Image (tube, rainbow, N blue to C red; front, side):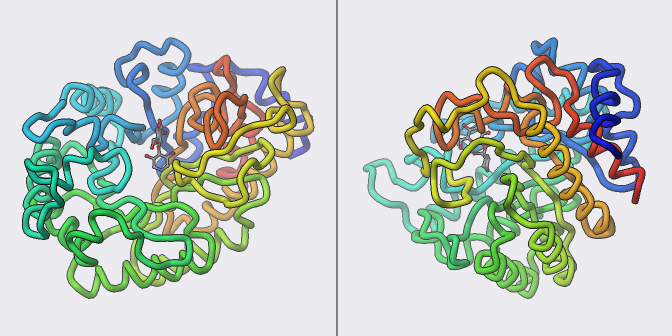
Length: 367
Ligand code: 9MR
């Protein structure tokens, strides 16, 4: 489609009454989702809520189900936000994703310590992990359809991250986490989720990890490629090779946290590691007054390029979830540099569809 046609299609429609919709266009191809914040799943976001209801058939919780949110104290769970999140998904008949059970980040320190503040034993930490997984997965059994069981277990070179889980339990902490999750809800889909798996070294580590998990009998059904992408990374070819590498293992691929950072790099690595922050300069926040038209079009072409690959691999890709609804919601306004104005999603700060929206819809039709 010509750039002018894309602009006209994007400008002619308002949120909530967009035809076609993302989920309509991709029906029978794969699910299309968004990560929600509390204002959204509590229906207090007048801009976001009509978009969510109209456009998406699956949701993920941006933070509400992370250990630190749902299980902040050793003897205390905070189920209320997660209950509302799940009820929202049911009301809208969506496929509901749980994110995430076992991670090194957003997990309180006490999880890894005994009452004297000393490191837990392997048995102690396994017991705590089992209790957490049983409680959380068990509470939403039959309602949350798929879980990110383990998040971000790998280093960039493909070796195992030396997280407290790994150091205290050992490499089989992943197998145990999958076993506990499967026991708690035998019908839920279970995923391993990570970022930058498009890079060869880390991808090889992930392939090996999943191969071993499967060989040990883990009920792993899919891998989550987070998809925190740049304008020039990963290439379409890297994306395709990554999907194919996991397809060969017999697992489904979920694009779990898709967004495209359009701002100048302030760190050297392509990473979603939230500890990799950097200070900004005047040049690193160039679009505070709006995204120039040529950048809008470049973003639309970039989204088209990625969706071309996803659609080509529709037999393996079962879901594409955006990490946020409108540009104003995105974590990328504060990462890796705080307080910038980023444009990574398909809907602008007013909730209007961008040219990238039309480009994504168009890809469903041409394949
Ligand atoms: O979007 C989430 C943001 O609100 C939190 O502050 C941040 C803290 O870790 O986590 C963000 O979500 C992350 C996700 O859980 C795992 N992959 C990377 C995502 C972006 O940081």
